[in-house]
Image 1 (cartoon, one colour):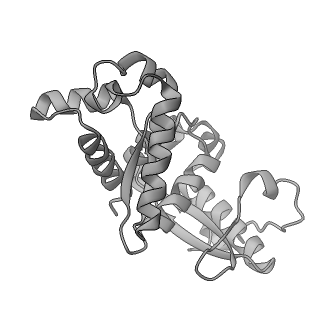
Image 2 (image 1 turned 30 degrees about the horizontal axis):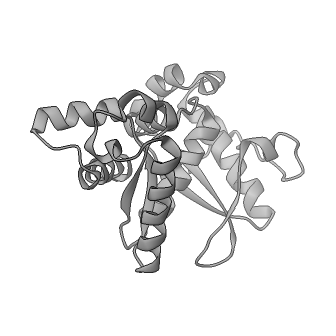
Length: 214
């Protein structure tokens, strides 16, 4: 990353800094077993919009100020022995993910989304397993073929847990993804699709593809 204008040194952050722990999360890479942090980057063109949509980004003076902050975290984490990966994030998929997961847009959420992208973009590409929330099930359970045969939400939840276990047993890579049933119904009406369980997972896979497309 480039240095600040006028020769100003980028801010650095030590791992012992109280502000680092709640802002940057680390994970263990399942392939290498190394501690890893994934930091999000947006484009300069999208940053002004990001400052409106993500309240804590408005604290930065501008794009370069944010880049300096990102670089400071990268240096501090690297000095503490934590591997750092920078992932470019587009704002529209991020905000769509926030809506699906009911996550408040924030800088930390941006990094969480970048972490998800980093792992999901590894081959082989996963198939999505649609996750239906209880309130959605209660609202649409009788009008969607995939859900109608289940008398209550717990019956559906147990069934889907078995589906996920069976897929894992076959060595398939699946990614549970929360969806909105209202959106699924609108999609089905536009395309004349049925509302079977297979179509529910197909819709979730299309949403996942949209979220993770580079």
